[in-house]
Length: 183
Image 1 (tube, rainbow, N blue to C red):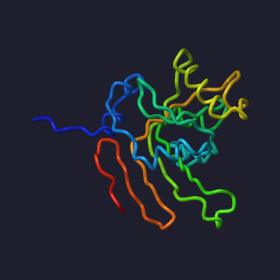
Image 2: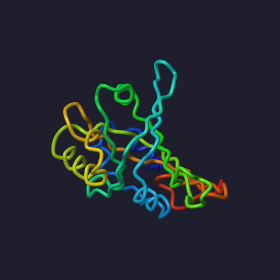
Image 3: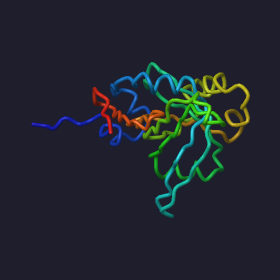
Image 4: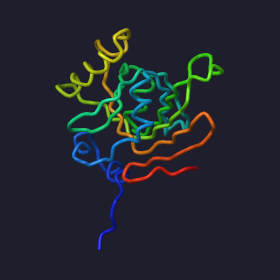
């Protein structure tokens, strides 16, 4: 009798974005969808496994529901960056997204969300250009970060999330589980 693997375990065992696209993953909770649709900036954390340090980058992102890959977060980066070199060696990333403005005492923001997942460097070709076009359409004022020589497209498959509201109530979501868990 084989034990049932979680979606996260299945994703962990896959080597490429094409391997993952066939997996059925549940939809994100409405709060995550709303934030990903509303916001455009995220802080991406990567890990340098050799130096045993982390690296934080401010990223423009685009939330997509793709026919093949499901719900994904698209980013782009220059290939001559520390972040890109780290992503070649280690795919695990965390994204922090929030809807607070610069004047966070204004009461307009409601949530911060930490998304954990696997970042795949999308191979040059039709899929990369489809994602690049969608990313540019969502971030039209920032082509310098999206198009050009040496810019790669990144596709993040989210495996878990922590959703924190303005009252410090935290809910956890994990791919493959049906319910949110309060923490």
